[in-house]
Length: 209
Image (spheres, rainbow, N blue to C red):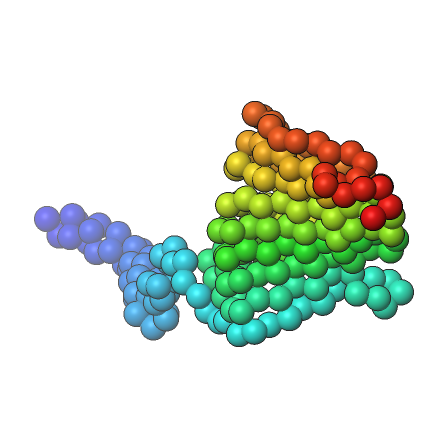
């Protein structure tokens, strides 16, 4: 019996340093957990689509390399959303200026813009106006009206997949959609195209009047 006790005592003495190290390590881990700041629970949850700042009666201008105005964007109120870095604009209006081209203006009741400002969706009473060019017979005033337009700012393209009414001078057309490229001055009407195309003088007016 004494031999067995002596053997167990020797084993305990050999394991004692390991046991002490385990206790110290466990105590250190526990202290670290107790004293470490807990992560904010709000940061762990998904951010809500809520505004973090707004601007009233704003006007933003992008300049061309020569210092002339390239784009002017205005609105009654712009609200920024933190979760996706997007913007919502009340009564947005954008006017694009290009050398040797008539200015183009787009406006609506509500606008939603991505974080980069490259895509703007216009909702409610959307209206696009391209002023007539230097030669009205070749480049007359053009308008488009729809409940929705999408502006691709970098590509200078306006498009919609909603019913649209297009006027070009005295000509009036309707369609289920539209793509207007202001660079090439091409207009594509998409689906169920109807209307009247008038060439030459407007009806009821004599040439030269």
